[in-house]
Image 1: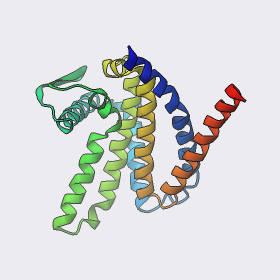
Image 2: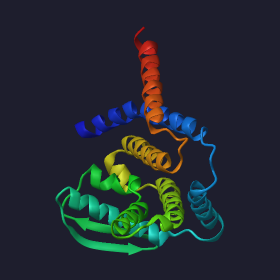
Image 3: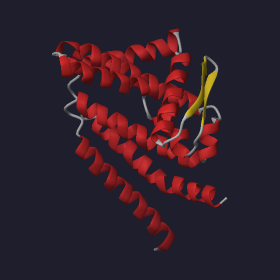
Length: 220
């Protein structure tokens, strides 16, 4: 009970950060002007996934596979072991020897396929000139990152046991913050107009203003 109350309070405290971070993100997004050249491949990947998702096909199986892989990876990071691994179109599950909120929430802010593409590009660049693959790499990053974000939002519309066990408000706030942070980092690498330092400064300033406004309302 104490842990649940603590998570509720922490979730409430994280809400201003999530709001401030989202506003800062869109503020930097509005500064992007260069959509030509290599950044265009990233946008094409994102756009093609959206069209596929909305019109043709929702890759439920591949999302569930990436989701359960992320659960397994988080379990290994925490020193646990995976006893069983199950994936199907309607859902999946892993049986592990350890469980905590990090393992439960990890798939919701860890884009498995995007990270795999980053690792593949990095490893290939160690052995050969990979500059010719940059357009394909950016396309795949845009496609896979959009898959992660859209399918994660879809999954949050349904009551997920991972989310409920960790506390809904705390989980959603944390997932929002970490996903916006991840997307901001990737966009800062793709688009020169997206300044990560300015994003952090704006987030801190906006969050501070929200906290102070609430404090002023309650106590002054």
